[in-house]
Image 1 (cartoon, helix red, strand yellow):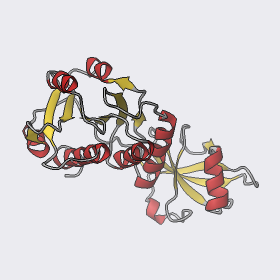
Image 2 (tube, one colour):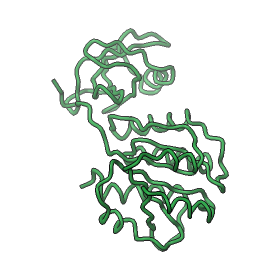
Image 3 (cartoon, helix red, strand yellow):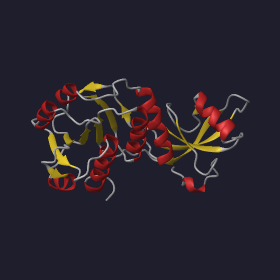
Image 4 (tube, one colour):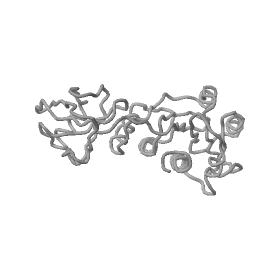
Length: 253
């Protein structure tokens, strides 16, 4: 049975938390320390209050706050409120940018529905030390707030040659080419044939080196595109490409 979450008296309206544990009727979930602090000291949760839980596998569940003490509590699953669903099969391969834009990019890409994020080190990449755990925390927070039922996979850092060599056959790779001698992204996507999923590749602040650009464009799965006449920041370009893909081939229509 799936219950309408709009009928629930949830804490703060619709408080949603990610739980990395199986969810089913009667399941007892012990929140992470940060979640307990948020529940008990920010949201002032009390025994009997309800929250919504999801884990990316078992749908969304209404849970009851139980076993409350000053520093601990548990969440007991009561009823499924939404059945599990998957989002678009879209990956984002991005050259990391400085800390704040990188975290911002992760949050917004999650809201835009990406299934996986892949940090890619290129010749001109400045930010080479990537805290993937921090990026995952940002992705979880964005999934909680955007009502996604999944959290994007945050993959380990790869070099550009590693990414291209391991790219799955049949999966399209949209190359955001700042050189400007390709079709506009909307036109290119509308004319593209069926693919076994898609990915988007964006470069660092200084763009791709000429040799990298040549190598990317010779790859069998690559679809070169332009993002218009203006020069965008690296994080802006990634989000613009994600939005256009969603509008043309994703779940916005």
